[in-house]
Amino acid sequence: MSDRFFEHRALFRFYEELNDFLPPEKRKKAFIYSFNRHPSIKDPIEALGVPHTEVDLIIANGRSVGFDYKLCHADRISVYPVFESMDISPIVRLRKEPLRKSAFIVDVHLGKLARLLRLFGFDTRYGSNDDTEIVRIAVQEKRIILTRDRRLLQRKEVTHGYCIRSSYPELQLKEVIERFDLYSQIKEFSRCTLCNEVVHPINRMDILHRLEPKTAACFNEFYFCPGCERIYWKGSHFKKLRKKIEAVIKDT
Image (tube, rainbow, N blue to C red; front, side, top):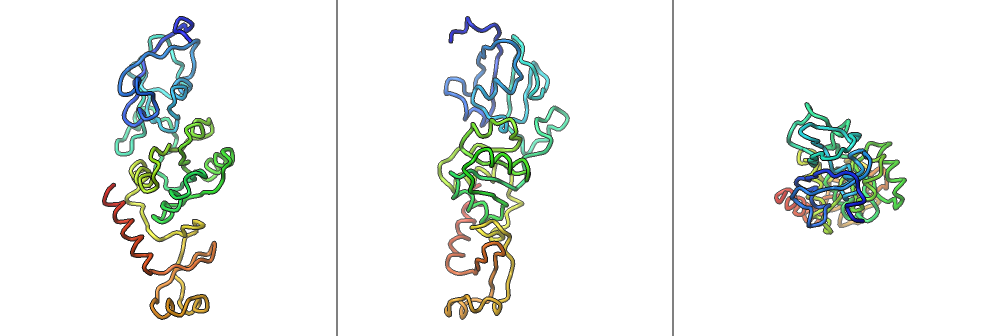
């Protein structure tokens, strides 16, 4: 539709990783946004393709505003991503709580990421392909939604979420660790990678009947998952996973 059909114009500029959601011609530069009436600022931001969960600070004509700010003709709008290391509490935060909680819900297309997050000790729900159910669980259990579907994050009920950029599970994991500054919360091998329950040590004699003779003879330290009753021990697979964890931490 031609700009002559629009009554108003505003100047927008998006910063840092928010540019990932914009078409190339709008990235890292100011551009004109044409509109009618006076929509809440959240509407044009998402109309441009940026989920509101990715935004932590909006500056309108030099002052910080909330998502309910009404866009006006000739406004100058700057939109910033979530700040993890900078305290912006004196100005308008767009969320009541920070996004650094380490409880997640992952959509059905990110199963490998879910297992990696559990391997690193992060509470991660996974399995539903129903967007409404994902949102319900996220809100009820105060979980951060991880998805590659930006439309899911644009639902008005969603307050905590992140749009995964990479297609590769290990790079996705690095994204999440860096995005939410989770280094100090890593507790590798503390959760079951299958069902997400916290595992705990168990006496070897209590599970001896479930072990292969070679395993029982070579290992003394075992861990038990109360959810799916899986037994873990530090075999050859443990060394491989340890190298993977060290590589991820080293590269982040």
